[in-house]
Length: 419
Image (cartoon, rainbow, N blue to C red; front, side):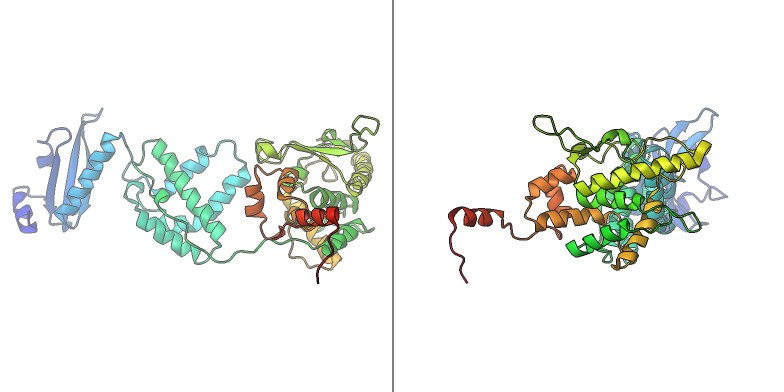
């Protein structure tokens, strides 16, 4: 049908409206019309009558009749799958609904992270009607996002879109997840994780132990060095995640052990909790009990004495939490507390401030590998579900050549070294 013919077919309707023609159509029947005032083809599906007696319609428009036919076909496909999305339901609304209802059990920090990362994408795509959104549009928007963000951040943005649309899909608001069809584009090079050398690690431990105080926040009374010294000792010498250390309780710490047991039980720490919303560790394998190095035992003993002093000085302001690492009033340390104090220690150690607390764990893996500890054992110590995780996440810190076998065999057979 040409535009002229379409126009003539509705010329008997003075206003150019569709109501008189649509009123004669039954449920599910389609109508395609040329509307001169809009210079577009309009297609409509009649869905019967609503509770108020008014006819319910879904309308689409297009520049060509074929475009409208394609859109009507998509509408029929959606109706057959019980998709009931409004033409006003946008991708921004889908993300808001997912953040509000689709992240049960996740911490407010996780929700805030997704909202922050998705904001630039929603500035680009947010007003698009969800059912009209295409994989091409998602790919283009993520490409623009990747131009100014790291690949890892771009991956989080794509995953957030996919999960938000999946949430809408589960609620019959869209028929397919176009974000799942898109690969994450390569973004800018992010900051590479790094590990302390043995000399740098020793410098950090010395700096944290020296008789100097560090501040939780600017303007706050400084804390004694025992707090960060114990924190660094646990992360660096035992490989415990920083979120696990912040959630550690005194009743999960055994500083005495049982030397008279058979076999003897060394001082240890039970890593069973984290600061995640559910309080559990990152994975099931992350629940582990680790023997403590002597330096960590001494640091925790000193910290316990300082915490007892804080409790006495706080008097009625102390809030008992049972946590090992707390503020002066017994409340939990935040990630911001730790970052600020750790940066101060690193600057004092002379290694610069461009370090994060999580790199203490990376350094643990590096130091273990340098000493010839097998990857399987390192994975057990750090609580990874498999060696694949250890090798993938910490591949830059692992020794490229495993020398343990050669060293043992040389020692057994005492074969003379060549060269």
